[in-house]
Length: 456
Ligand SMILES: N[C@@H](CCC(=O)N[C@@H](CSS)C(=O)NCC(=O)O)C(=O)O
Image (cartoon, rainbow, N blue to C red):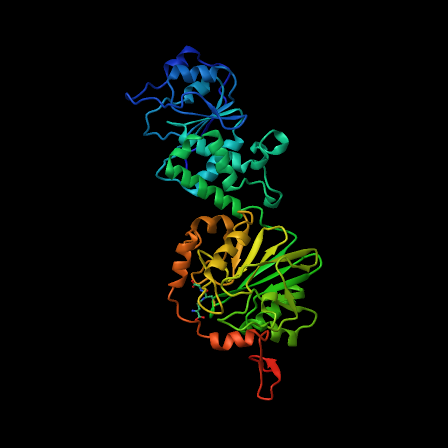
C-alpha cells in the first residue's frame, strides 16, 4: 500500500450534521468541464464506475442508499468534487487512492485490487473521466473469482475460467475481452490499457503455479547456457530429467539421489549442436531409466523414440511430446499434463527462437510449429526454454505471443530474418552432433561405443 495514499474514513457517528455537511462541500475550483461519464457504469453487479459530476448529481446518487462505499482515484492537484463529505453525511465508507496516470506501477494495481475487494459493496469508483476507475474495476474483476462471469452464473461461456487455468485469476485476454464488451473507458487511454495488460499478465502467470503435486527444479550450464530440468511426482518419487549436460553428470546424479528421485526417463528435446548430452553416460551410472529422443531421428541412438502426442509418465504425472520441428527436424516440446509448464528446447527461446541455418533447419516449419503447438497452450502456461543467453529463466505463452520480436513478425518477415541472423557456428558442433546422435556415446578406436567424456 506504500505506492498510494489510502485514507479510509470511519463510518460517521450518529449525530450527522445535515445541511452543514452539504455547505462544507468543496466548490468546483475552476471552469473545467465535467466528465462525459456522468452516470454510473456497472462493471459488475456491485461495482460501478463514474466520472467527475456536479455536487447535486453526486448527492442524488449517494443519498439513495444503494452504495455502501466510494473509492476516489483523483489526486489532490486535480479539480474534482470530492465525495468525502457526502460519504460522511450518508455514512458511507470512503477511500482516497490517487492514481497518477504517469506513475502506474504493479504495486498500485495491488493496492487498488486490495481496496476494491475489502471496501463494502455496492461500491462506486470515481475519477475525472471514469477511465482510471474502470481500469481499477477491471483489475478487481480479474482478481476476484466471485466477480467473474462464468457459464454457471449467466455469463458467456467464452469468458469463463478454463479448467487448465486452475487458479482464480482471469487470463489477460479474457479480462480485456470483458472490458471491450463493457466498453470500459480506460481502453481509450493507451498508458492505462498497457498498465492493465501488464498487471494482469504478471498476476496471471505468477499465480496458480505452485503445485504441491509436482517436484520441479531448473538447472543451468554456464558454458553453453543450457537449462536442464528435473520433474518428479512427490508422491511416488518417480521423475524425469530434460536435456542433461555431460559436464554436469555428477551434479545431476547427486541431486537425483538427494531428492530420492527414481528416474524413469532422460529426455533430449533434440540432437544438440552446442553441448554433449549426458544421457548415455548416465546409463552407465544409474539403472532403471530410458533415454528418449524424437522418432524424427529414427536412426539416432536412444532407448525410446517418441512420436508427437506420446505421453511419458512419471508416477501420476506425465509430459506430452509435441513435435516442434524447424531448429532441427526432430525437435520436441514437452508439455506438462495440466498445461502449466512446457519445455520448449531450442524451438522457442525467451524473446527468440532456435536458429534454422544448420541440421536441416527450416524457418517456415519452426514458425508454424511454434504458433500451432506452443502458442495454442493456455496463456498462463510457463515456458521453459533449452537456453537463455541473457540471464532469463522462464517466460509464458502470453508474454511470448506479444513480445517475442521474431514470432510476432509475419511468416515472410520471419523467414527473411532467420535467413540473415549471421550467427557464428556453435563451437562444439562438429563434436556434439555425431556424439549426440549416439546418445552421448563415442566410438573408441576398436569400434566399440563408450561414454563420451568418461570413455567408461
Ligand atoms: N555461442 C554458442 C551457440 C549459440 C547458438 O547458436 N545457439 C543456438 C542454440 S544451441 S545450437 C540458437 O539457436 N541460437 C538462437 C539465437 O538466436 O541465439 C556456442 O558456440 O555454442
